[in-house]
Length: 418
Image 1 (cartoon, helix red, strand yellow):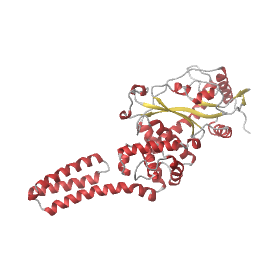
Image 2 (image 1 turned 60 degrees about the vertical axis):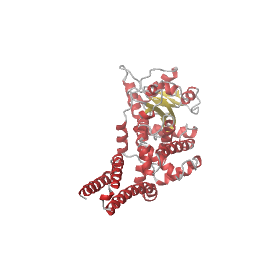
Image 3 (image 1 turned 135 degrees about the vertical axis):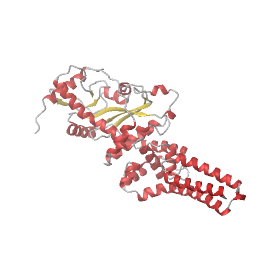
Image 4 (image 1 turned 180 degrees about the vertical axis):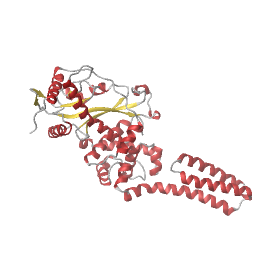
């Protein structure tokens, strides 16, 4: 009986200790649970020496611990959708309950009802949003919602494809009415006249387990694997064009000049044929872009080099201020959807769909004035260091310089405000 007392005491101590720390050490809990089962098996072999009532108590205690944990997983989503405060909805799903239910209504027709047994479409969408917001592994998300790791992967892919079906409503090149509003808002907030947006790019890290055979193609300038997301935003941090899927090794200028955005812009089919006279020049609608992009009649970048004039320095100061629009947009995007800075939560084939869904959800949040906490931004910025892009000094066509010179003169001699 002395041996039994020692075994029983040690077993009870370990179980209470693990229960107190299980949230932080789920893997250790599993391993120790296996150990306890082995001990129970040993006790069964020696039950001729044991008190049967004590043995049954230990067995029942261990089983109840496991059942309570499973019950909590089953009830988490039920509790969340019925009891969560607005702040909790933002923390876990990055949007309020009302906007979540609107999203569910709009994308439900695009989700296969019977794709995952016993998991409602509402719960599937919640699984995808919590996964993208947290950036946690599929196994971790599966434990929260009590679904298998493989089912989480299927759900994420399917929900992201469904979200992409509402892209025309939330992420599209502006027509004449919208582009005029964009230009007005951009000049009011960022001071550049006749500007319809800002172009930029970020790298989305790829976990080593999700790399394809041609993994070296995804190595960026920081010698890390990534996929490029290139986008254009308006004055209010909403994306109106995205280009997704290029490997991290590809220069941003190559991504841009290979896009439909570039082809339409060069053919003058991107924006309405609206010109504005600025410093005796007729200026078309244009976008701003950094030094990693070529200059064109509709793409305006900063001056760079050692010998630039005072007027050019002033232009660069104004440019740096306005370029904040794309930098803030990317910060808010990554802060909302941590999967974009933690490393991909899916295979390389599904990643472009996940990134696109994040951009659409970002726009939905911006339209509905969902907040982004500073803590989210700080956390996401520390997760992955963005590589420095390669510069591009290409100037395409004489009108590119003419437009930049006219805007430079505009800032040097600003018109009187009435």
